[in-house]
Every structure is written in structure tokens, then in C-alpha cells.
Amino acid sequence: MDHDEEVTEKQKAKARWTKLEAIVGNVERVKNLANDIVTHFEKRQTVFEGKALIVAMSRRIAAELYKEIIALRPEWQDDDLSKVR
Image 1 (cartoon, rainbow, N blue to C red):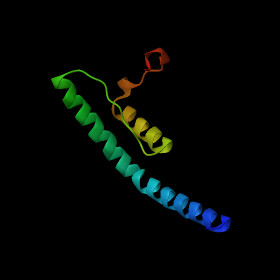
Image 2: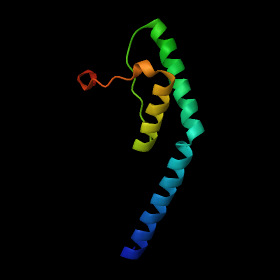
Image 3: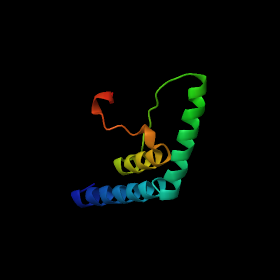
Image 4: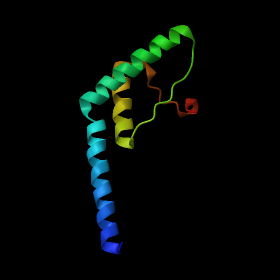
């Protein structure tokens, strides 16, 4: 594989990733996911207290998901960075 073919393959892979990220990060999907996460977490808290970790496909999706979760539960927002672990 020469350099030009390698660049083309990288460009194709990046284009596929970009399309997939757009599908996964669809606004309505993120809103539904945020609602599901909040519902699941609150139900789980009735059994025992704990923390949650959410992994997202990209920083953009993570930021959008955070925004949607805070829209549902504004009291979960805390600007005190000493509480972040």
C-alpha cells in the first residue's frame, strides 16, 4: 500500500466514523438516552446508594448528554469542582 492509498483509507475511515457519530449523537436519541439514564439511576438508588459512570462515543455526545441530564435534574448540577472525583 503506497502513501496515497493509506491516506485515502484513513479519509474513508474518518468519514465512516463521522457518519456513525452523527447517528449515535442524534438529538432525539440523546434526549431519550438521558431520560433512560435518569430513570434507571433513580430506581437503582431506591435499592442502594451509589454512583454512576457514563461512557460516550465522543466528547460532543458526552456534553450533549450531560446537558440533557441536567435539564431533567437541574439539582444534579454542582459547580464545586472539589466534589469531582
